[in-house]
Length: 464
Image (cartoon, rainbow, N blue to C red):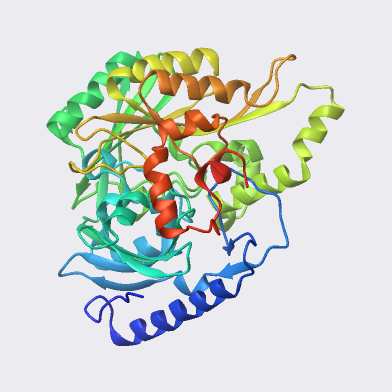
């Protein structure tokens, strides 16, 4: 076992953390061989809903807080189950933030690293795992190891992103931070066709700005093929006015105008969480009367996710639709990365064949020259993440997977990648070709030789 050093943590926090590590090692070793391993987590942002079982769950509550923030070094040591809501609050007190803060408050740091995360700093700062300096991981064979570049567990450090808890669980992570200013100045740029929008993304990637506005942040929203926006944000020391989208106003609707806006940095980080991007409309929360009556403390992504999970478990919507004689829906909930040169083709396909709007657009590229084997993106290549989340009515003669398979095929055709937080329909051969089966097999043999943790294909496609 390799502990974090005294340099990494102050003594009281280190002592408590070491006790928690020892406790979870003991709890893991006490699980019966062959029994499924589940984590006792308060929240989840996955859309692979698995059936409830009586399987024992590992208590990971001791790993849900920030252990240390070092302003001078611009690093933090953070429990793997710490939410970005808590992490950002701790770092913003010091005028700092993680290099990438995923858009939903209850995404955990360990989840964003093992399952990938993204946000509007990803064009300049890559993905969350690229700013991780070291990870303390409970592996599938019961060891606790420190994985970092250049040490004996460097292969695990590289292979942990996109492993989704199938190689082990991050107990703590040491991450880089960056300085922030008090406010973010937004400008919304409208485009009337996808190719023009993708060309603007390429310009921002090359210049770091657009129309003279520095691009500390950039993401976009497509309402149709003829109405697309890129939102470019820059840190600012001043704000002539401040908007608040946690009350009656709704952020995504504001993108259509006016063309300029100001938010506090904290409100900017969570601008999408209040309405779960635009998905709160499914619960009526965007209707003025419902919004007025729905308590603000419940206007959160985790609340909406819980409601969806309950609907899935008890099949409430499906049962109601069947009674009304409506055709069944298919959940099309995905995030995909497409090379910017092919982004317009993807939008043309998606909006004509699937027809779901709005679509989130988030440019990204790897931060450096290093690659991450289980999610093989090309260094230097600019991608655009397209996020779409909702339900589409199935044609009478089709079953679940009809739309999602079309998306998967198009993503592969365009040289892109698909995140695995939601349902997937790949054959096993397709899957391992896309997600580096040989490298994964080596890591599985090295860190979970007895297969105590579910395999990546079993977990992400078969739903084990």
